Length: 321
Ligand code: XMP
Image (cartoon, rainbow, N blue to C red; front, side, top):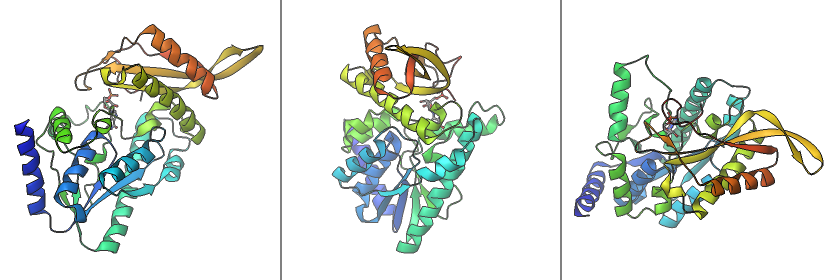
């Protein structure tokens, strides 16, 4: 596609011309920040420092995979393990908005602290790059206009640290998501990154209904991993917009051999959608759901029941919190 290849060249050239100091980026492993990372790596490889904040609320193995994937491309990630801190600030918090608020603030604090450390070390960090897209800009304008009518506070790594003493660089600010994907493909990002399902900024915290504990995170990670692994095996992963597991704060009675069990419930959610604004629940094959449910109950400690969410958006949202 000549248009996209021209665009890629132009963005890289602009970045190269503009940037005359070091540039940092909050890299999440999602499509947008990954494309920005790749653009910066091509434009100013020696001046670029991507920062990955591990909230401990990511999918199983995800942070190792992201670090490895970028290492293979030749991008070395500055990794920050903040998982303890996030568990601490979430301790006992059940309210979804309160969770989102605390995670958002903690993320800014951790990122800021790390950026300052790097600034001390390197001195000339001048820019902060962000993966802001055109719809993000429109959405925040609309939200400003309708202030108060907000449905849910969305936390986005791309939209965070405004008070940092850096000049903001947003190479994707005139692009839509599908264009960003095409751009990513053009500049050589692996399709495993480009096709990854969207993931909310607050991570698994909003998929654990009720309070977030280390144990709950582990349980959810295991169940989610099985669901995603099977979706890929059955060639269904790319056919849905998003799919994930949710850990419910209730227990139910089951039976295993001669014993009565009293354990957690996992809800599976899979939706089809164009843009995440509206969504239909995915009509996954019964054989598939049957297989996944069996695996989860057999392999995930503490889970004895699996249910499938059959609500669309609206009236439900995609995430449960
Ligand atoms: P909802 O649950 O509002 O989600 O129907 C719509 C899409 O947005 C994702 N989502 C988020 N993305 N930060 C994000 O970057 C957030 O705080 C957040 N909350 C929800 C959700 O996964 C779905 O794709």
